[in-house]
Every structure is written in C-alpha cells, then in structure tokens.
Image 1 (cartoon, rainbow, N blue to C red):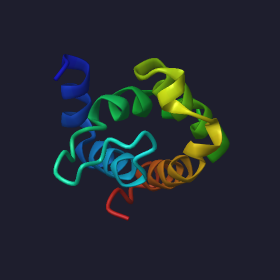
Image 2 (cartoon, one colour; image 1 turned 90 degrees about the vertical axis):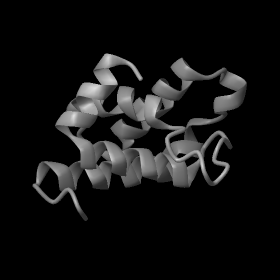
Image 3 (cartoon, one colour; image 1 turned 180 degrees about the vertical axis):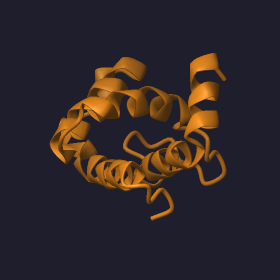
Length: 104
C-alpha cells in the first residue's frame, strides 16, 4: 500500500472504510468476488482527497469517473452514468463526515 493511502487511512479511517465499502458494494467494474473487500482501496485513496472540491453528488460523479479512468481502461470503466449511484452514496458519506457523523 502506498504511503499516501496509509496516511489517509490513519487520519480518516472510517471515511476511508465507508468509501471503499460503497465502491465494493456498487462494484462498477465487476471486481467484487465477495472476499476481496480491499479491492477498491486504491481508488478510494485517490477519490477522497478530491472530495474537498466537490459541492454536489454530480461533482463527486465526475471525480469518481475520472479516477476510475485513471486506474482502468476506458473499455473497463464504461459510461459516467454507471457511477451515479455510488457517487451519490459517497456524497452522502462525505456530507456525514463533514458534519461529524462518520458512522451514518
């Protein structure tokens, strides 16, 4: 695991876990095999730092889509609409985190 991701997990463990879990549950590129729950850690590690610039779920959708494009091929990633539901979930997680409600 890279140093930046380790630091992010230390500083914001619950936020990191919740974003990773949301990505794993949504499984937008089909890599959830049930037991590999850390499969989306890398993507969460690059999405979370960019959430500070987001002002809506639509902004999060752009970030999530861009980050997946940076990690995977365009063919694997598919259409931006594929990421709408998980982006809304991440937006909700982010809003709760900022309100001090990280467990919701």
